[in-house]
Length: 363
Image (cartoon, rainbow, N blue to C red; front, side, top):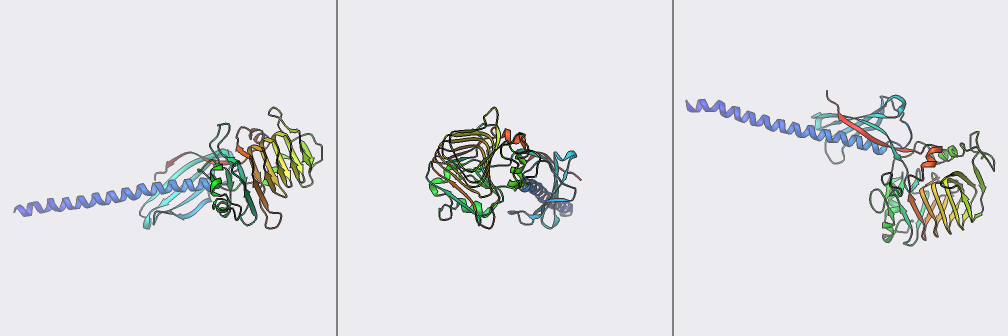
């Protein structure tokens, strides 16, 4: 009789314990799925091109169905839609667990944040068509914002994984950084700060042409490949330059050099410098703002040359001349968001997608 009375209690206890284990397992899967959904948001932020506004529809797939790299059985998918005016975008990340055992949905709001540039940027350049050379141990490429107004950016930003590997593989046989040069390229991500970033919405040439269309006075005529009604402020022919001033901190300007240029003396400048040819910088050169090299993209920076803002090299091509970046001597390339203000005032610089807020979407 006592056994008969205790048996139902024992059965109930075992069943309750089993339910607790099942509830605990479901809760664990649910929590993990929520974290995976957040991973999808972070993934989307990394692949959204740097640009201006957003241009998404409800069917835009930012990240296709993707397996979580470390959690077997978990996957996520991210779609996007614009808010009014395209100033912000709404991301929806849907995560599922093994055999659809758990589903979580996260909604995130993103806007445009800091400039999508490194201290040195090679957007669109590939390892096969790009040559780099770093000489000595006195140069510096620094992505920490000199004016302290923005987060650190990569010392060197690339869009090609193979080029990133080539620069950081600890050998100079293909132009990479040597072991004693790694700490000379600093910024976001540690040292060496060479990071793969999302591509830009515009090409370097399109961006350069936009700058050449916004200034009112002209000394050299509208470049034939630029479709605009306003020529550039100053158009210089390729030659040797020394003892010149291309803009000041109070009156920055857009300067274009057509053809190869050698800067060997005391030259200073503020604003935007566009070089349509090989650029050889030596002597005492100090430029504050955005330097764009395109065309015959061979850039050698040596001596006491300093670029404070950002250096951008045009997209590489599959034929000669290749993109060549040669940094040596006491050359300094230092990211400075404040010195980029004039460039952003003339033509909006591309900006990275920035997370504003997110929340779990409940059914």
